[in-house]
Image (cartoon, rainbow, N blue to C red; front, side, top):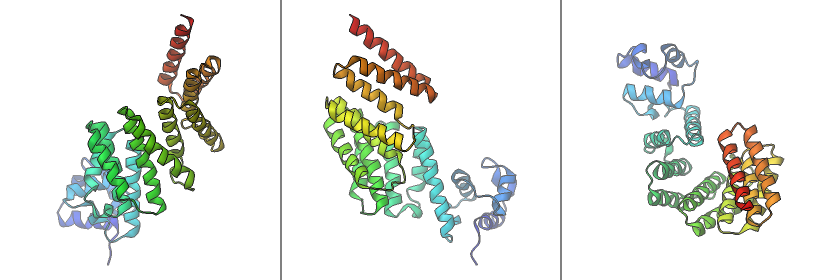
Length: 293
């Protein structure tokens, strides 16, 4: 008879003669463990990982007989990675990737590629190893299949390649990969991560500006603004305003450029991003002082 997740934890704990208090110590509260063992509470990824480590088993021990529990576990790992990625917490990303890379649940192609994508971030942003990160991302692309989920991961990978190449000042390569990502977001409908559409457009617009392809940058920025309005999402809305202002100023359209920067400043203030608002205020003053000389 298959045991539930809570029953498995309780059964192994008792067989190892470990008390609830001892197992919970440093992992969760005893009351939470009690509810987990009674299947009244679904443990988080980090809690289940801590329980498994204290009981000396791989985390898959608790999941191998239940499709729903495996799905819940995978979803929790995705959530933890996304949360860490959003907070630029690359230490946590590295910890999760190392823990899961040999996990049988992550041996299938989409899940394995998703971990590899996150590993590239730790290689670049945590260990400053540009070559290793780029090679990991290119390996991810070579493992691609033709299903929709793989296509969505491809967009994320191409976007990351574009960002890293731009950060290194290799603009032609950055443009190449972001152009590919741009083509994919225009081809694929019903993306799970809707915000990748704005991310790709914003990153491509910045590279176009760096390459002095101003009209191309403006075109993509205006597309980004339209997308934000249509979806009632302020994500990167202020950033697109700033980039448009930068482009217009490069074209010598001072009044219009400053106007867009002021709108960006106001939008960042609404979002509570005072540091970015202050940076734009400084940029406006610096530009105006330079113009008056």
